[in-house]
Image (cartoon, rainbow, N blue to C red; front, side, top):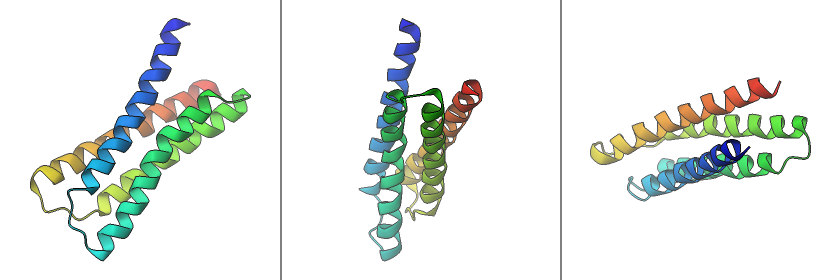
Length: 119
């Protein structure tokens, strides 16, 4: 039971770091009209991944848990989409963006796997 509890908190921490990474990226990219709108969306969706995972851990039933984890997967997928639309000037910002896209993809796979195990 303790092992399960630790991985729950590891994923909470991982989703928090993902959202923090997205926020950090948004501080380094050009402030064009398009980027500002895209950044608003990606900040919301990336934060929603972790917020919904915390809600999942407080779920009232197995069905509720599965639904909230599906939302986490959906928000991770949406974050990946918005990250691909952010205009960066190359260099470190592009490396960071690619890393965040990879992390969003990993989170999607993790949440997808959790949903399959709950079924």
